[in-house]
Image (tube, one colour):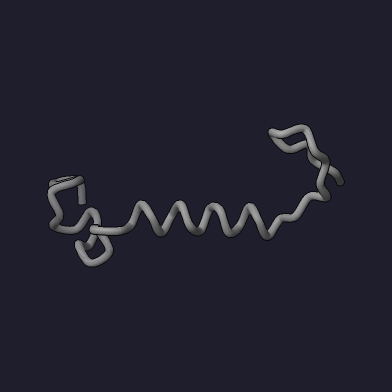
Length: 49
């Protein structure tokens, strides 16, 4: 399957690029909260669990 990029060029679809992009975004969002125990004693979500 081919995709059309923003600049108009065509490229064969590569699922690994999607996986890498989502992984990088997830890791970027976790910076600073990695060891807080999200939802368990942190300020965010207090009282929900």
